[in-house]
Every structure is written in structure tokens, then in C-alpha cells.
Image 1 (tube, rainbow, N blue to C red):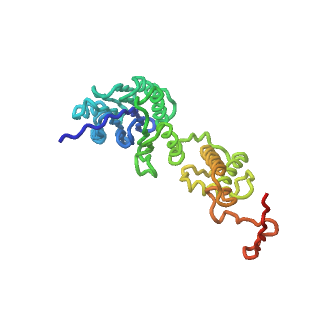
Image 2 (cartoon, one colour; image 1 turned 60 degrees about the vertical axis):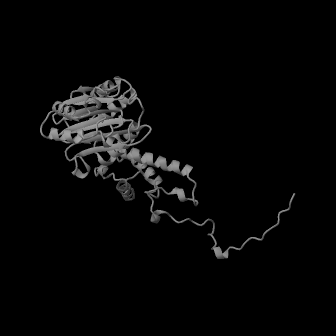
Image 3 (cartoon, rainbow, N blue to C red; image 1 turned 135 degrees about the vertical axis):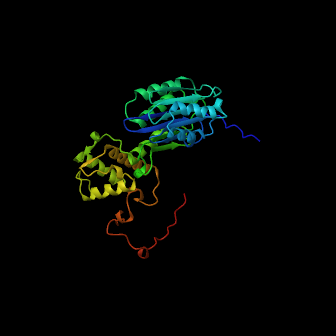
Length: 349
């Protein structure tokens, strides 16, 4: 019995490279669950591939193997499309190790389907609102300043603004490969962020990427660092106080208590990448602290306390840092010394 054809799913993607930084990347959105698990393929120093439409995904690893053997992007596209039994209903976008780009769109891919190939990139899509989706993606990728992940995300946003997948939105992904770019240098997957199912997956992808960026990457412009002046320190102290990491008065001075509280916060949030020893602080950390403290204050407004004062301590507080409840007046009597008040009958009206 022949295998059933895969269900057609629309996807728009961009594959590209950055020759200055040695990075290869893919960004995509689709009305298909977890498209980031089947569309993008890549390896630093080798190239990147997007396999979509009714591709079964096998073109990804096959294509990478051909790229490793030295075939160009156009040669890989020709080989994969000619050898595929589903040639008429698959779509490919490829960028090789030298930044040469090529693409293929099967003649029976669901409309609108097509691609735009440029210098070092290719934008492709199927079941799109119109051809303007990939054209806008291409224009945006070429004109957006910044590094590769910023340009890839901007291209994705541009495609969605022109209508994107005409059936709607569901998943999105951003992957970038570079030599020793992964966590602690052990992998080449520098960026690997995915949204598998969401009403607005591109916006969610950007949100997650900003946290991923601040936690694991080193992309911030060093010219933006802020000195630990009294205003900055006070802002950090207030946030650390709300979050329960720093008790006591806020002085605007980076003292030992503040340094210890900040180190605890950084360690618990995996922000070791943002530690500095030059008397300065990354602005992203200040903004993140401000955001989390605002969320904590909002939580206190909407969450009913179990006991008085329970919500006055932030999530960074430990049991040892929470001061015991102070008795009011001359002190609270013990339970055994409390005598019950005599019951008085109320008169009925």
C-alpha cells in the first residue's frame, strides 16, 4: 500500500548567511504545528537549507551531505529536486558555505508559491496570500541594519505583514549556526528558538528570542553599558528589593549587600554572560530587573495573600531573609493565655 502524501502545509522562510561574522541562519513561520522541527537544516561552515511544502524532510540531511562534499547551492537544489519523487510539490531554499543561494518551487505547490533569490539569501513560501510576501521579505532582509538574527526576524515580520500564510499562523522558528557558537562552545547552534503552537507565533518568537539573547548571547553594543552611578544603582536596588533579593535601605551605593544580592539574582536567572567587573552594568539587565519588579508588584495586587505580609517578599527572598512577624503593642499573648470572651445574646428587632 503506497504511503499517503503528506498534508499540504504553507510556510514562508528565509535562509541566509553573514560572511563577516561567519553565521548561517533560517527563520520561518507556518500554519503547521512545530514547523521549526522539520523545515530548517544547517551547519556552520557548510550552509543552510529550508525544506517545505510537501517535502518529507529527507532533503535536509541529504542536502547538507551534498554541501559538505563541496556542491554549490544551485547544484544541491538541482540534485534534490530531480531525485525527489515529489518534485512537483516540494520547495527548497539553500545557501552554501560561500553564500551562494538557490531555490526551487515545485510546479504543483499550492498557490501562491514561489521564491526570491538574492545575494547571500533566499526567501520562499507556499500557500501565501500573494507574491508580495516573499518580495517584502527580500526587500526587508536587504535593507535592515544589524546582524543576521535581526535581519532574519525583520524579514519574517515583513512577510507576515503582507499576509503570510493565507490560512493563518501557528508556529515559527529562528536558527543560526556558527562555529563554537552554542552553549559553552560545544555546538555550532548559536541560536535555536522555536514556537510550536501560538496565536501570534512571530511575536512570541521575538519575545522568547530577547530573553534567549540576554541570557546566552553576547550581542549588546559595548558602547551602551551604563556606569554604576547613584541613579542606576538606586534603580537596581529598588528592583532587587521588590524581588526579595535585597533587604534594608536603598542608598544608591553599590555596597557589599547590593553586590551579593545582584550576584544571587544573576546566578538564579543564568545571566552569568552579563557579569561585569569594571563598575558598569548592561542596560538590558536594568530593563529586565525593572520588568520583573513591575510584574511582581502587579502580582501582589491580584493575588490574595494567605497570611498578612506573605506577598511582601519577592521570589528572590529565602526563609532566612524573611523577617519574623513583629508583635504589635506590648506583644501578642500566647494562645493558652487568651481567655474567650463571654457570649452575649443579641436582641432581636
